[in-house]
Length: 169
Image (cartoon, rainbow, N blue to C red; front, top):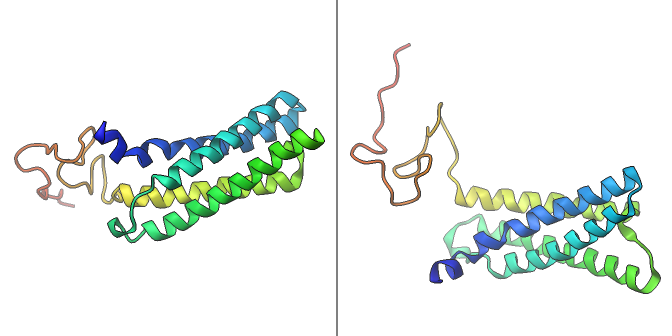
């Protein structure tokens, strides 16, 4: 249970990424194919994605761990506030005015901005967690214990991470 609590951000972070993208895609499909039910799916994804964004921001890592945490957290908060605003406006107009906002071009631009923001935020988070790949071939540029299927602390045995001889040209 302690493991889950310590890694909660990494568990919930994919909820807003997936659902905000699907919200935009469902609204586009509804607009193109004139299917009202897809707008309902888009709205549901936006609302749950906004809740997921709140959870992801609340469980985020502390800034002392990595210098990229500061811009990552800034973009995460902007994404969270934008998605909360979009969800409240969309649900509010549906309830009080019986107006489906999913086909409105201004709303779609806001939803696209949320998709771009959540994608960039996820990119920054990925840069903090994953090492850049360098060199050629599978596993090149990875340190000990970072090869395919190996988590941290599970070294590949003797000589793991040792430089290999480069082929002569």
